[in-house]
Length: 239
Image (tube, rainbow, N blue to C red):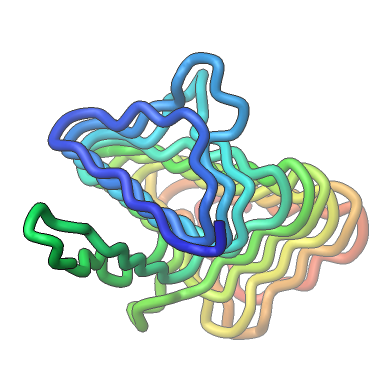
């Protein structure tokens, strides 16, 4: 309580219920939602790093957090958040107590964004509250899916604000919010064929800054809103 927890394994980390202010989970293979878990992670700050995948398409890692960063080097990311979520940089330090009564600080350095390799998909769902995508490491990016990796950002009862780029090489990008969607200055949402882009503000306004770009190279893009669609720059074969 009011402190930090770090879980690390050379192979899988099968997560039950972890509660701390700061949580870091590091896996040499996959991060898995354990059977009978009620909430995998309850924290303010969450850092997830796996060589394989984080969650699965039919069993997401479940969270109640404020800030999150996740990296799956050779797999996909599947996260479902109770409330609001901010994608940003997260670092976690814990103290290990040694057999000689000394202590050693272990730090998982600041990690930013949601990122996959090896054609990994990225899914971030917020059940209640808003999703805010920020750039924590000055590379201009908040969400990056490698290769054919697909992206879903879905605020089921809130809004989505992107303050940094959302990128896939050739995967589909879907951004959905119950309320508003906003792309702020210089934000790029890009993919290329066969990947498409779908953006849907179901009951609200879709707002692009004049310097924001939606680009589906040799492919298709769809922008939809119940209220206004304020268009920045959209490039695709079919719009």
